[in-house]
Image (cartoon, rainbow, N blue to C red; front, side, top):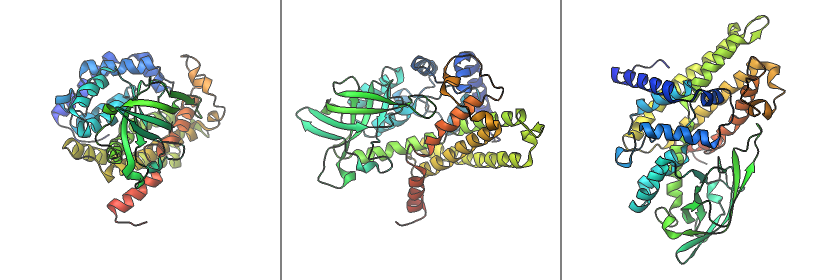
Length: 399
């Protein structure tokens, strides 16, 4: 990305490159590059490596053990990590729950949970969506009833990403049914080992059980695990979602995907010539690159505002929509580049072993990325809903 950097920022980029070259396991990098599923141990290993360097909690304040990086530093790290095919940091504890605890949690909750997020002692997952409450999240029905020093929770959560690895889940639950839907929701922290919690995998199009259903049957949760005030969870949920949507933009991963697409276009042939020399295909790549440059600039501006203490608002929705549109456009162009090789996709082609894929275009990984990333315009708030938020908030629209 052609942006201007200070000497200090350029030195930081070199530091990041040296760190990645020294500490990133080549086998893990190869798995990320070729679209293979990482094990829990591999993800935890990278978490521990970054924590040891002090680079794990990049946007946390130093008072809580964070790196307190500037927006530019975070941008540089994301870009270099994606270019090196480093694992993406699992965001649920670090980038989603932690900001909520810092803003709304008690001192006791911060002292208990934040260090465990950093150490990796707790793996968090997100309990928001339900079968009847996805984009219309306020319609959630998972119920929590106060019983002495506990809440008794019953209900079902779905699309729980990496829930099979988690030992903790932060959940939105209904604690009042006699008021407006948004006013009767609370934010609970639930131990996944509590009796009554059941995790059931959902196998995706690419053959992996990345997401899950979580069933809660008479689950007893200590009242001390309530974040903030009872029935104020909708406020905390919206605050968390602004951070989630900002992270979904994935500028660094878009850039890495674009670089891979350009290499693919130089390798794939069309009528006996490299696809990169096809004017129509080259124009499509150029259009995506222009949009990515604009997204990168917006992302830096919004991250800088967040670093100054302002939580992202409607800007987070803008990043989410544009970032996911660009990532899907890159995936679609890559799928077009491999042509008919993308059709005979089978999950075992990319998950069966660590051996190189048999086709020179790595079509299995291309198709896996295409299929898996169809979801990114839905999770974190469907893009259609985000466009309504933008219209109502920023443009004064109605309806």
